[in-house]
Amino acid sequence: MGESNVNLAELIGSRICHDLISPIGAITNGLELLDMVGAVQGPEMELISGSVGSAGARIRFFRVAFGSAEEQPLGRAEVTELLADIERAGRVRVNWNLTGPVPRNQVKLAFLALMCCESAMPLGGAVEVASHGTKWTVTGSADKLNVDSALWKHVATGQFPNKITPAQVQFALLPEAATAMGRRIAVETSATRVLLKF
Image (cartoon, rainbow, N blue to C red; front, side, top):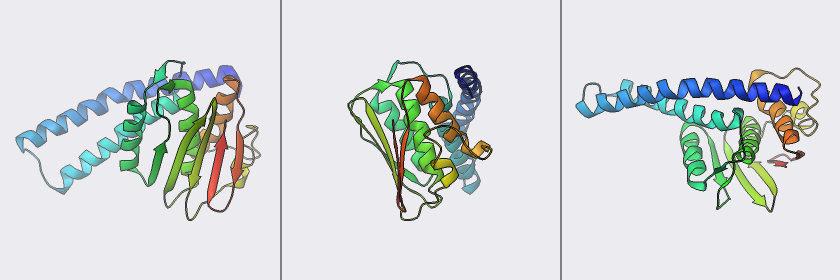
């Protein structure tokens, strides 16, 4: 997968997310109006509302992780609000240890790394994102990790022995996106921790 392929994948990701954000937002607004007039109540409404909220959160997250990313900054409040929505929809807690705005393309790398960590945490866990100067670390911790060694061993090079599945696409995109930014991925894994540095 060359740089042109990464750019094409980013454009596709941006297009899909852009086209889905509006209808999901419209459904959310419609549900709020129904709730205000008391037209529909009960567990069915809660199920629909929760599902739409979860879908909206993932789409906004995917827009950063999979979409085209320039160097315009994303503020801490915007990122932490997005991550809080993701936390409500899943089992992984995220600690964003950055105080100021950071370039969107670097947030993209962090989100892809977060997705790699998330895939190793079927029972949930915690992910910590930090930067030290220009270097970033994304650390996933859990009592029980499910680390696919074929993925984690080769994410630094982007050369995988087995075919990547859709659920694993973040492992292929992370090293490609990092290379396009002049960065390299480094990985450490243990029984209870996975660490990605770039």
